[in-house]
Amino acid sequence: MSSIAVIGLGAMGRPIARNLLKAGHDVVVWNRSDGPAVELAAVGARRAASVAEAMQVPVVFSVLADDRAVAETFIDSGVLAQTPGGTVHVNLATVSTGLAHRVGAAHAEHGVGYVAAPVFGRVPVAEAGALNVLAAGEHALLDRVQPFFDVIGSRTWRLGDRPEQANIVKILGNYLIACAIQSLGEAVSLAEGTGVDSGQLVELLTSTLFPGAVYTGYGSMIAERRYQPAGFTTVLGRKDLHLALDAATDQGRPLPIGQLLRAVFDEAIADGRGADDWAVIAEQQPR
View 1 (cartoon, helix red, strand yellow):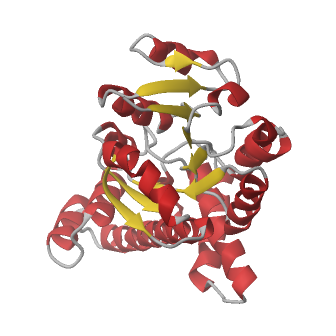
View 2 (cartoon, one colour):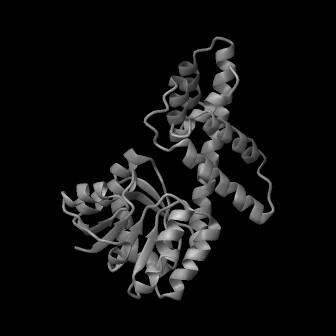
């Protein structure tokens, strides 16, 4: 039995921690609010009183919301100075490439290993232990944490030895999903304008030209106007879109579709749809 901590017990962190428990690991948990930690303690997890206490475990997974949460928890708090050398921190959050570099440097300064491992897969995929893990970091560190990746995911994609390499792939994946949602919304809007049934349109397209989880899943949500419960909110979608735009600016490369999407996301949030699934941006199409 190996010990591992999970910091951040939101929609993704909880099923990840549960699967590690089911696999027989000794799991330490910490969350800003008590409820999720209490829930997991009832099925065998050990609660840490603080992030610093959770960081005493040899391998630590963190599943936090954004750049600010990661920076506040692991850099600004000074917790790394209290972390034993040789600990490996695996950051599953979708963060900017700039923060990935900054966090990696801070960990190295304190002798703490750092791996970036954002994932592809919504909550049901996490519950099934079938995530795709996008991992980058030192080869030896990846080898150390691979047994835990094998529990939470169906495949681990090793993308390089610099953590930011995993983060840019995750950012680009989410950017392409947003592009697909936008194009689906446009197609459904035009088809409905001529009286075509949107459900039949989506079924036709996804069974012929565009098979796959993104077009099938989001296409059916758009056709059915089904945006709750949200698997990934519009607010989070806009956050990830901005990460792609920032990365493009850093490299001096334009993202014309990204600029369009910025306006669409902003309009959707201004219309009060921030807590809906990000597929709701399709509703910003003229009808």
